[in-house]
Length: 120
Image (cartoon, rainbow, N blue to C red; front, top):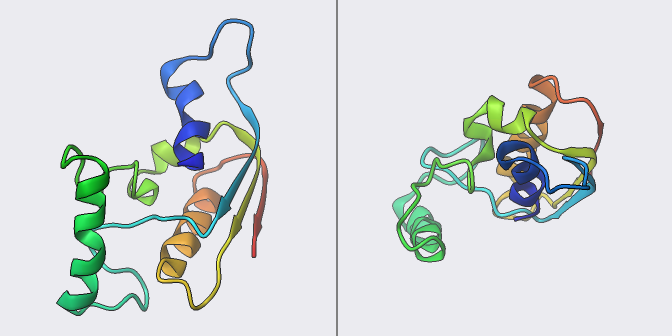
């Protein structure tokens, strides 16, 4: 959610009297997902069926699993619009979404975003 809030001012235009950026974004154990497994994410159907319906429930079926709201790595243009000077992402190797957090960091690095980036 913090990622999407940081992108909105640049996508939709800033509010009069305010900059088009937020100062910092902190993502603690971010919930990013997508249609295709990344890295060492389990590919078995039982695991994926735990999480695939969650996104459908959250957005009322309006957006698919590769929509930038849940899978910002699907679009480098989306990542380039990140309106923040600094980003901190934290996760752990035991987190179910660690591969997505790593992909998010790599996506930011590759898209020419200018800012401070920390990953723990």
